[in-house]
Image (tube, rainbow, N blue to C red; front, side):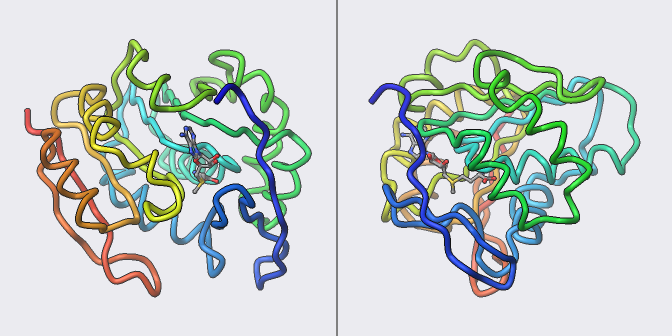
Length: 229
Ligand SMILES: C[S@@+](CC[C@H](N)C(=O)[O-])C[C@H]1O[C@@H](n2cnc3c(N)ncnc32)[C@H](O)[C@@H]1O
């Protein structure tokens, strides 16, 4: 697939203009309240910020607009814990800086966190980049089905944020869920907004203890997982 650009359409919502992927016909985040959904699903779904500690490594499938990264940084900074945070995200169709700038205008609460991200946006796609003292961001570009198996690291917490399994099945294949498990530290966790049965089964088969918990907004359920030690 090579590195390809994101193709976006813009939809007017209460948040302002929000980006929709024309390739996948799916929005990048909840049209109702993207930041609240991120906090509910990915941050609390991984028991963060309770598990914040020195040398924490969070990884994500699907960097998109960087919203999940920014929400994580906001939580990390307000927790005020010393130490380092590494955030690695896998992205096949990166937005360019102009697209990211436009997309992140919908989140005025994240403005202080957004400016430094836009400064390093391109650099973080070339290799690990320093976002702020103690916070490193690396966006690994290319098809995650190739890049994740080749990754030499593990994460303490995973955000599984591909487009919906119906529209983006490549991001939820059993082999990829196995690669996530293979790159999870002992007792590491995952969270995702989807509760699709085939995704839950693939994650369980890969070695996660899976639970279905209340979803955000109109979504009844989401999925959490803990890697058996
Ligand atoms: C729901 S969006 C991610 C939203 C993002 N976490 C955010 O905070 O804005 C899903 C992302 O997965 C990416 N994606 C889709 N298929 C992929 C693949 N095979 N490999 C890597 N990334 C892929 C899309 O380009 C898109 O950016």
